[in-house]
Length: 625
Image 1 (cartoon, rainbow, N blue to C red):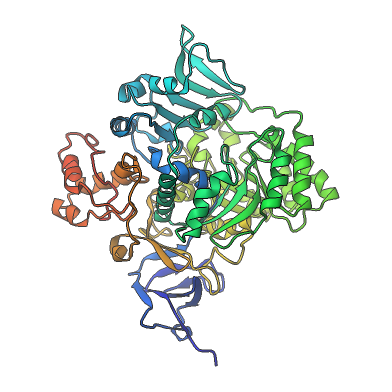
Image 2 (image 1 turned 45 degrees about the horizontal axis):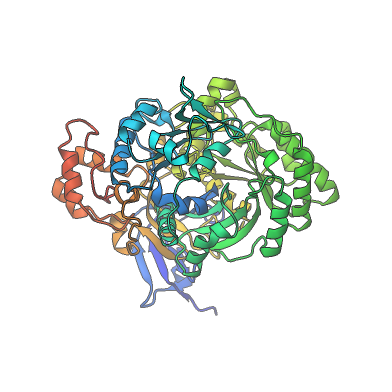
């Protein structure tokens, strides 16, 4: 007779959504050595003296979320330098944050706002002006990235970059100028984002020890939102292996709180084949472990195939060399059994890509090879059928939640109703995984993505999709868990709370299945478990929180403004009349591990003469109430 397992961790009295059809709901779960060993059946496990037992108190628990397209390695290197406008409710608040951070930022450093926001989220429903940015930060360089289409630089940033009247427009971009020919501060991407990213790369980098700290904070921020796994899609100016050294070090030191499967993104135009040939000798798909492993090639395979979307501009025509260059690279990858992914926004591009893939498949069959497109906002039914026939998948993201208004203005509301056609993908049986494409366009917050999948609405509240292209809450959650696991060749290993699967799960602030639709995007985690270990905890579970992580450098925006939407939560609580002493008693920040200046911040908020004046005061602003 098999002896019961002595569990390491037992979670009791929860509303556990397993996503396992054989056992869809549970109350208890037991974990041993990073794996789930039992659901409800107490006879299958023992509680020993070292077993940690946690009462979930009726909280909804779901499998850990898995973003199939997130730039976490690159994002981690910069997270502590970036001022995040994700979820900020008004432009006035955003400019106040900018002004305060500019005052705190030392000489030689920049203030950077790098994606994750849209003017439509602001009450004012507009962009900041260059005059407003210069007034907020007259002396400190400021770089503000807006989607893939443009960047705003103040005068100090123009000086830091060396952009003058004599600076020519770089290939693929425009430096907008005033009537005297001097740079105004607006950079425009035409037809791609190279000018934006090249300019951002001119800014100073954090030293290695601060990059380590920054990456840990970004992972904890993602844990706070319920993420336990991601697939990193590489990125421009993210060289392998040099820019992977920080995440590799964290892995070696056992400080990963997020599972990462990474793709390799070519960096050298006209030398793409050489890049992949070199990497094939250095690593390979699956090399690594369950926390950090190679996933294959992409999302850039060749530069001639880059159809980055910018719905303020006409669709770009891709280079005539695309077919020959892409065929060389895909043939090399298929012959070496390397899975690959490819950024693909427009159906016209997808048609050309599929022509290449079908030609390669005739000589080097794709059978058994996990390949997929990213995005596919305007893909047609015919091309979906071709993707299905070749055994491909599609990783979708909520980029349209941030730029749907621009798409409607250019192409019309009828064309926007299936951008992308998620329901049709599922009906055809194509593997689909959900994600964000954070951080340079959309926010990293998975709950905004889930809200978009369920409601079909942008962050500005515009309804884009008819009901037939929206998903049920369970369907959307499956795409963010089981769906994404296919894209890292880990189906059956993660994505469900089932015996034998990896012990990654999340208890939520609110019940995802019953809260009003508009509240979905406000959900967070109160308890995040990765590999059977608690990596984030707050509220009723604060005593289980992992040790605090100091913030480096001290001038980091993270030290003051925290993560997604934190200041608004604090303001609402104060305005709701919760006694000040209760705030001070509970002002323990488990997000950044600080409890600084709570009284000063709360007093400043209480004394505000208008709804947001003084709102972003000093000290920590992500308290657990």
